[in-house]
Length: 311
Image 1 (cartoon, rainbow, N blue to C red):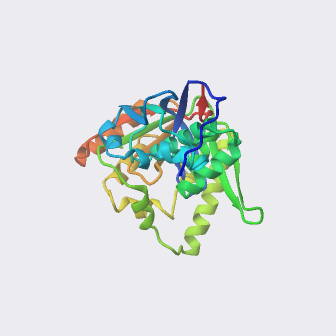
Image 2 (tube, rainbow, N blue to C red; image 1 turned 90 degrees about the vertical axis):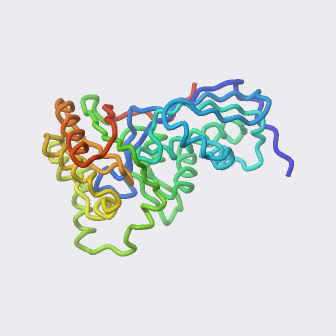
């Protein structure tokens, strides 16, 4: 098939910043997500000799194992227009989001690709439609939505109108995040396959009550009940079976005074929230990991109220 010529209205080079994200935020399974101040920076040139993808930053070896056509950036471009000519694109991906650890690395790449594809054609799809495309590819909204919108996002699918609805809550600057990143990974697809197809009523009620409190905490910027609001009965315990020692790292964060602690996405990263005692939480999470012979590192960050940005 003959490839379409790209739009002539785009600049010769662009830079895209796309944030890390955490899905679920504990009790908000598959509907609540949060963007974080950890960014992949992607530089795209449109006058290269041929399609080139260059990975820099962390986890380079893992990204180099992905064939060009399977790369989520390329998939995102193709999702805008499968026939667009990408043979003269050079992509330099400066990666700062750890790969397959529960911090939205695939969603970040996909959302970047969709944004690039939107520039390559004359379709000019709006943010709501771009987010819907990302969700449909990912299969769940809790990383794609915060990736585009920033902040804390709540996403719901309207069956009558057949469209995704997303609402955003801006987050305070003094809310800190402590993430323990172990040196092993977890594939989201396999992790989701282990989740039960049926859920007990008491577990559904448990999560409904917690996620209502979760949204209340973030709307009112009052995190007194965040530890209670992040408790989950649907997905975390199932996923912890794959890496049971990580549950001790979560408990260590709570015992050190974290406002709340969660399994980030499908894991295995553990995320804790704090307002002032993040270094104590950092130490206790690392100490718990050491006692269980888990190697890894800590990332200290905060939420981001910005999503994908293009310059």
